[in-house]
Length: 346
Image (tube, rainbow, N blue to C red; front, top):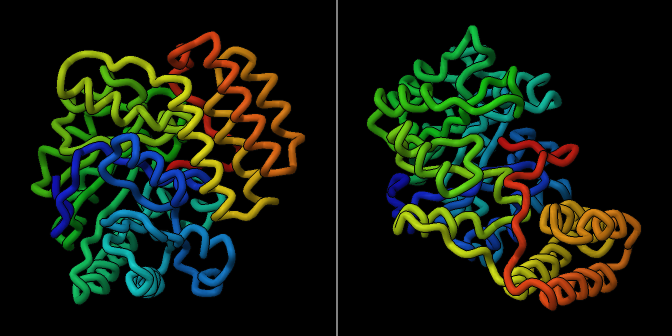
C-alpha cells in the first residue's frame, strides 16, 4: 500500500478523531499493528494556529513517518496556507477533511458540509494540491457518501478529486445526515473504488476481524480505516491483521499486557497535556478500556473524581493487577463504545 512516495507497512489505518487521535494514541495504535495514522483535524484559521489546543494536535515528536496531518476549513487560499504551515512543521501527507459531521464544523460549512458545494470543494482540493506539489507532499481526502440520502455525490466528487491530483480517498459509508446512526453501507465505497485508479480506503463500522474481511470483499478497497472500534481496544489492528492473514481469530490480549500498554499510554498522555488537563482527558480512554469488564462501570465513575495523575495511574495499575488475578486474558467486551460527548470521527 502506497501513498505517493510512501510505502506503508500494512493497509490498516487509524481514523482521525477529535479529542482522541493525539500523538500518544496514534503511537499506541501503531504499536499494536496499525500501519498508518492521521492526526486530529487542524484548523485552517491562522489566528488559532498558536493556541495550546492546536499545538498539541500538531505534536509529532518521536512519531514514525509518514506524518499525516488533516486540515479543515472553507476558504481555498486559507486551506493552502494551512497546508504549507503544517508542511513546514513536519507534515509529509496532507489530508483534507470533508467527512466530519459535527455541527460546530458543518455550521461553518467545513467538514462534510463542503459536499453540498462541489465547486467550492474542488477549489479547496486544487488549492491544497498546488500548495503541496512543490514540496512533494501527497494530498489525500476523507469524505462521507454525501450530505443526505438524496444527495450521495461522493463518486462524482471522488473522481474530480483524483483528476485534481488527490492521491488517496477515504470514504465513511454514511451520509452527514446519518451522523453515526444506523449502519454504514459499502455499495458507495465499492462504486468509488471501481471508478478510481488511486487507492480507496473503506471506513465505518469496522469493529471486528470478520467484519474487516467482509468489508474488503464487498468494496474491493485498498485499505481499511478504523476509528471508534479502536477506542479502548487498540489491539484491534493486530487482531484484524492476524485474521486476514490466517483466517483464525487471535486470542484476546493478556490482562498484564493491557495493563502495561494503558499505563504507558497514560504516562505519554500526561507528558503531552500536563497533569490537570491530562488527568481529565485520560478519563475517557480509561472508561473505554474498562467498559464491560468486571467492576468496570464503578471504576469508571470513581475516575471522574480523581484529579491527581499519580493517583489515577496507580488506581489503573491496581485495577488491572487485580483483574489479572482472576483472568489471564482480557474478558470479552462490547464491540464498540459510543462516541464520548465532543468526540467526533473526521
